[in-house]
Length: 423
Image (cartoon, rainbow, N blue to C red; front, top):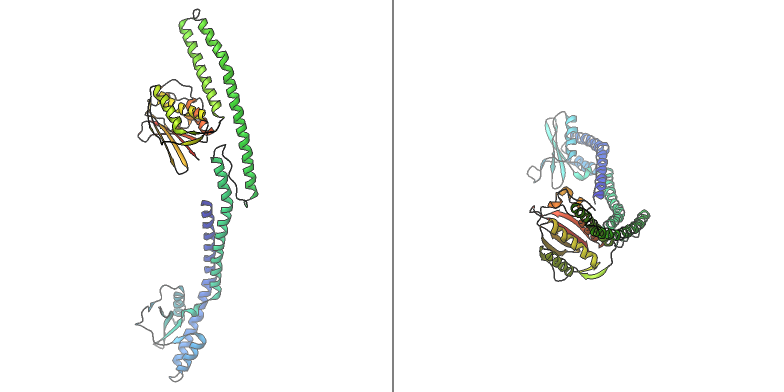
């Protein structure tokens, strides 16, 4: 729309410049020449009229009216609309031409009905009123030029709108394809669009397929590595417990704590890898949220939920359970242990909000905390965690066709996790 407006504005400005050029080079010279010729005719007619006798004047007046469209007669002072011709450009040009020929100021008057010009020409100290209809000034050439410019402007604007729509509509389709989920089907381009847009969409589809394959391979690799490391880690923990009597107690506790952290990190890495591989089934989000809320209360948290009776969704049940669990666990660790959950829809868009009562996060870090292994210095008051909780939640959400974002509550206390999607 903005492109069409810019092109349309450029066309209008160009046509206005053309009109100004035509006015300066064609219309004004023609009008000046016409005013000079008409002023000469008027003065010559008035002088001839004054020189004729009373008996010959009526015939001369009829001849002048029939051949030249000029009439001689008293002015309609009391007629409505009779006033000084200040508006029309031709009236000012005619005043100048008459004044130069007579050698004194001559004023041109106009009458609204019938539309005409009136001039008082002084001859031998006596004024003679001359008038002629406005239609006498009509010129086919200037009006034809203006008509051609007006029609060409309209034609160019219509053509520009058609071309812009032809170009921008496929771009809108491609933009929509970029915003949708990886698993969503690609939209169809207009059949009569440019071939380059169809080739671009085909390249994008191939690139999306390759990226999806790469993500699946990386997920399988991550799951495999994390799974293979759990066995030697378990043996190390067992060995530490068997050697507990031969190792100083403080060193033993530190080593056991490190192995537990490694075990938690491997568990979260497994969850991250498995969350990228979605299995779709029909389920009820309200039921899943209630299960997550029950687990949250068992761990000591409190939650307030505003949920509909049922909310159907198609996705991976276990992945969504892990998603909700990670978000609620983040609230338990860093958000004060109090959660407010809201689920609703606006048109085709669905929203699920998890809000806590914690200190919130600075706006500059709202995106960074969603990256894997990113931990704030204070971690909102806690030193525990690996920095994978929200990253796993975002990865699972994207695999389920959702968008996850963070924002601070307007009251200044608390962070909200927003999940949104379209069905």
